[in-house]
Amino acid sequence: MKIEEVLKTDHLNDSKKLVLNIMLCAGKATTMMNDTLKPYDISIQQFNVLRILRGQKGKPANLSTIQERMVNKMSNTTRLVDKLIKKNLVDRYICEENRRKIEIIITKEGLQLLEKLDPIVDRLENDFSGHITKEELIILNEILEKVRN
Amino acid sequence: MKIEEVLKTDHLNDSKKLVLNIMLCAGKATTMMNDTLKPYDISIQQFNVLRILRGQKGKPANLSTIQERMVNKMSNTTRLVDKLIKKNLVDRYICEENRRKIEIIITKEGLQLLEKLDPIVDRLENDFSGHITKEELIILNEILEKVRN
DNA sequence: CTACAACATTTGTATGTACAAATATATAAT
DNA sequence: ATTATATATTTGTACATACAAATGTTGTAG
Image (cartoon, rainbow over all chains, first blue to last red; front, side, top):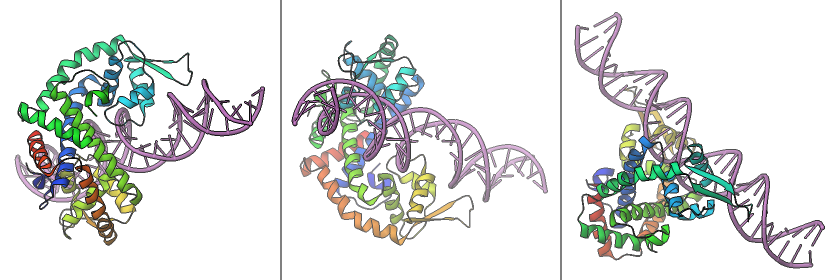
């Protein structure tokens, strides 16, 4: 479906189209992801935090480190982590060397949940680019990286 | 900057990269848009509703019509419209033929605000695709439409 | 040692997103 | 006419996003 049909409007220039296409695609990805994660009682952002913590390979992460690496800008990592603690997916300690800092590590339950989710999320990501060829996928990523700068 | 650097992770497959690239680009567009609209005390979603109403060319729109045409799925058009009414940018009436329906029209102030914003938003949209060529822009839109289906 | 700036996190408020339940009105079936 | 069903909107709750202000901690200049 063309952008113009979605918005029931007349001709749009290509720059306007790009912004709308990006937003619509992001909306689609978000919805797919939310629907997939929902049965596991976890939000996209919570899932992202867990993946970042797993990437630490045992080393604890500060709130600011997590915030830096989040895909979407996160303006409230504190509350996000609170929810993960309630679900026993992460633990939080005060850093002994610098008591301003908070150290966060993923629990065994957190790691188990991620292992269960990994193949499910992989499948979803493949589905998301299921309507384009391998070549188009590569071109798309190249141009999108330029758009980001 | 490569996706892997952003996330400080090792190799990612192209499907995963696409989802991340889309989300990062959408985040960039959202931030640019928010920053631009902020001085005018209006959110992206409120701006979108105003544009939809202007597209009606005098005809009133129902809440469900607005909802259909929103770029991002909107699960709460009622409260969004409430805020626009408070700012005198739209008016709301109960439809006489079908009292279940609500008719919403843009006010003169709403139209004036849009006229002021139009060139500013156009510039922003051009900036957004400022790092890619005209040809890349066209290819990008073509492939993104396939991704959306 | 004290005052002050810098840093890291937390809290508060407004807005937006997702979904379910509630309300109100219109249409159809009996 | 009464009941049931569909339609259109509103309200409630939980979570996410954006930003500003507050809190607590560390490092440093005097």
